[in-house]
Image 1 (cartoon, one colour):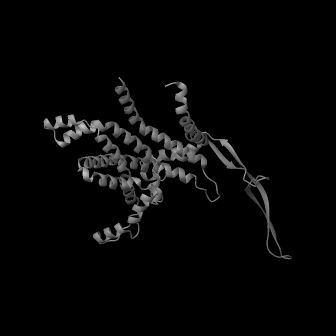
Image 2 (cartoon, rainbow, N blue to C red):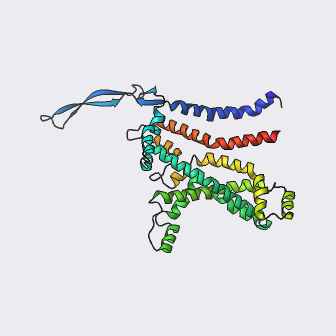
Image 3 (cartoon, one colour):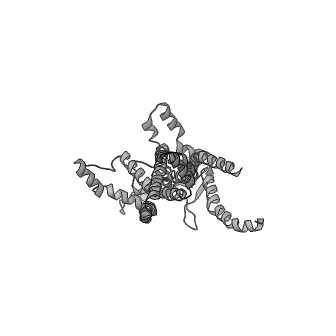
Length: 342
């Protein structure tokens, strides 16, 4: 392919990636090292009581924001603060004191470390479950009669088709208050339960929802991969006396390993940015994720100000975490690519 033709094909994609990915990322990176604050001034404000003859006036000193004379908008100033925003998010001294004193509760009082704990737990627990459940469904469908494969595939894909927030809300409504499943469990146990009164039950429901929602994606990928397994190799293994487990372990899984790595890459990037479950299960009072922490920083306070610098720092830390998690899988992919090219 000629270079000019290649540029015509790749150019639009590169331009859009630069416009919608690279430039916003650069803006967030720069914003994490800056703090924008309103310009304040000290003024004397006189206030008088009602009345004419008995009227009394008092003067007090107030600090108020400076407004633009033309637009009436608040004037702000931006300063370079270096790593200050990262220090405010990480609170390294407070975290170090909690770690050295083995005070887990004190460490979990820091929003970032509490969010990191839940995010890592959520990511590493759901990853093997998504892969295992997806592979199990794919094997079951692949061994099912051809006449029922279509309906099974359709039903299996339904959780993945549902919008994430709607799906999480559906699970939430089943268990919250007098939800159908909650009332059933209460009747079975003969006692009142509150599924959303403590963090661990909320986390279990969120883990269940993520596996239920994402496993169909893994199922589709694995089912497509199973169609390309060498049948001659499987028949040879059967003739040699290999059990079903042996065929799965030594033939099927090695064949599907590139797909397993692919699903792991997608799932790690997606689950590390968990946000929909926090909103859908209204879990922010008990558990938060790194993505939700960034969202929380962007919420206006009582004065209407938003912590843009800390939100930018939190976003960059989240991105660094994703890169660290992906490095082992990317190295394996690179080794497989180099090995296959020789």
